[in-house]
Image (cartoon, rainbow, N blue to C red; front, top):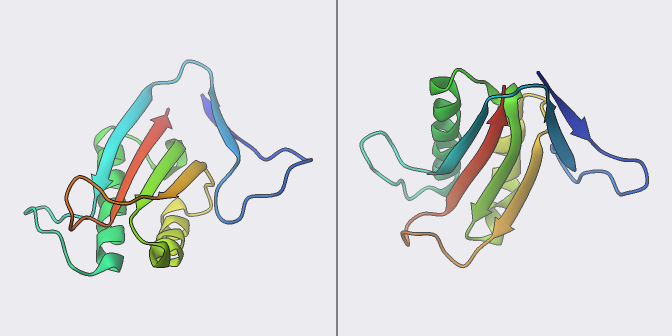
Length: 128
């Protein structure tokens, strides 16, 4: 099984580290990762937005590892942030975590998440 990234000629290239599409061929095992937020292992949500973004990625990648997968198995990621000023921090952390793998992604600025102190949530789909 392999993941193919799709960035067709004829449309604008991606704005940052992502692909317009991603597909998995062969007989893949699929993993759907629920939205992960910036919370520590003991349930603390830091006030620092950058720390929340780091923790959300840490938590998402921990689910991948638990499933025997890596960032290279990511097919699709959906990121939700609550403030436009968080876009640069989110992109920087995403690019650091992707390590060159540009899965299909969506990032949306939303009015709020399930808890008012949460500033970021990331869900994903992976295949291996």
